[in-house]
Image (spheres, rainbow, N blue to C red):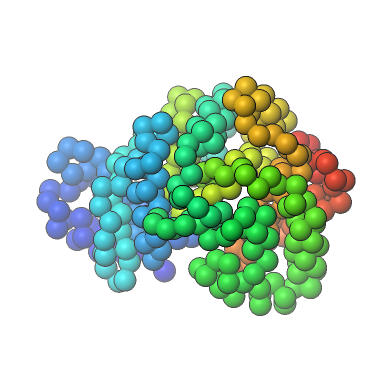
Length: 320
C-alpha cells in the first residue's frame, strides 16, 4: 500500500518548520521523501523492515568517510506500524539510470567504490552471509551462505516464494538446476575470504554526481563473504544497463585486486558462484512478489550460466 503523503507531512511537521517535502523514491521495502528542516536537506524513509535502517546506520558508523555512506540521524516508530529513518541528504542521481556514455564515464568511480568496500573491515566479528546490525552473520562458511538460498526460511521477508515457484514447473526446474550448479562451484570459494559485500549496487542504491559516486545507500541486503560478489552482481545485471561493460568490470577487478594483493584464487569459479546466487536470489524475490515478467527475465539471463564449463565465468563477460 502506498505511503499516505498527508501522514508524512504531519509526521514531519511535528519536528518544526519543515519545507519542500517531496517523494523521491520507493522500493519493495521502503519509501523515501526529501525534506528541508532549518535550512538543511534530509531524507526520511518509511518501511516495515527496521533492521534495514539499522544496518544503514551501522554501515555509516563503520565506513564513512572512507565510503560515501550518508549518516542515519534518527530511527523510530512512525505511523500505521511503519518504522522511519532520517538520514543526511546526498546529492546525485541513480548511477544505473545514467545514459550509456555517462555510465561509462562513471564506471571507474563505481569500481573505486567496490574496491573501498573490499578494503573495509567486515561488519561483524564472525559468520558469513546476511548480517544483523548487532551480532554475528548467519552462517558458518561462505559456501553455506551461498547454498542457503535454496531454503524458503533463509530470508523470512520472502516467505512463501517456494510454493509459488512450484506452481511453475519450468521456472522451478531452472531454479533446481541452478542450485545444483551452485553446489558444484561453491566449493571453489576460499574459506578465509571474509569481507563486507554491499550486494545491491544497482536499483538506485548508488548515487552519482558529475561522474563520481556520491553515495552508497541501502545496506539492508548486504552480506559478509567473498568480495567478488559485488563484481559478479554488476556483471550479472549488466545487460540491463548500457555502459556497464562486463568485460571492463571483470578485467579491472582482476587488475585492481592483484595490485592490492587480494586473494584472486579460483576467480572464474567464484564469479560464477556469486552470479548463480544472484540469479537464485532474484528468482526467489520475484516469486515472492508474483512478478512473472521479471522472473522470466532473470531466467533468460541465468540460462547461459547453467552449462558454463568448470573454470569459466559462464560467458559473463559476453552478456549481451
